[in-house]
Length: 169
Image (tube, one colour):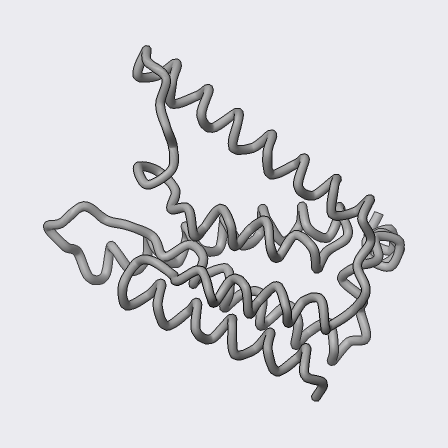
């Protein structure tokens, strides 16, 4: 296990603990996560730019949707998404190729929502429900990284995933 792997794991476990217990994460976990990612593998500036562009477009569309719905400019930070959730997504976007990031983004959002809905059904509360999104995505990211290592599937290369998916088409 390299120092990048260790920093990555410690940061993800810290994010999981804080987000599930306090519904927020400290900035130093994100810094530790970034250092772990940079120590984990070299990154491709073009892929990161595409992933960040995707995230920016998602947050602009979310802001536009809620602004139109409320008929006033709406800040989605802290009302619909936490700043820690948004920063977490920008940091982990460095790990993935664009197609793999899109898969991770959609699958982890759907999984988090499904698990949250099942949990809310089993353990209803009277307070307004919140989803520990960064914590849930961190759990899924740990599973993805373990599967990536076990199956020798590089998450920073699109062609590998596309080649595997083409076998099903």
